[in-house]
Length: 162
Image (cartoon, rainbow, N blue to C red; front, side):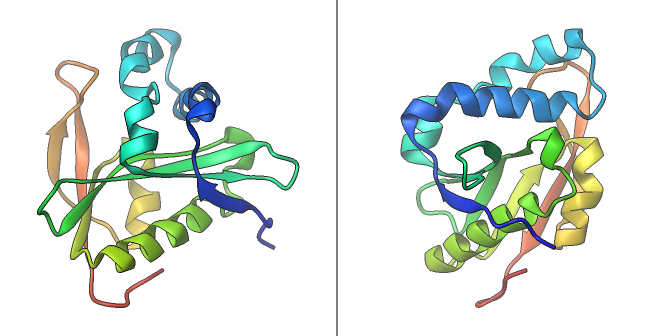
């Protein structure tokens, strides 16, 4: 059974709590403290992400933040970039990611986008593949010199959802 969550736009006052969520989720993939320190800047939620991008969060009825997702758009482009997608470790496997993606796909349909791209954490590649993303190559990590990440893309048709 899927837990009933509230999916809504993130607010600026939640920036630090969202950064904490992103860090805990990333570290749950088995990364050590040195790796996490190297990724801290890249994972720290910026005010501009909340004010300029489509940034949603999932929260319980009690108000606990359990997931977040962010879509960025470049002016004049027909594709979006999935920049952030994290689920609280205690909530992984409970369909939080799927509910966040439902919100993302509604927004993508509103915008009439033809595709979504992302640079995946290697441990999340299978999750994205199950949603319909296809690995198209490798891209350099923004935090770890010499490390590459799976580059994934999803082509969209009008009305497509999960």
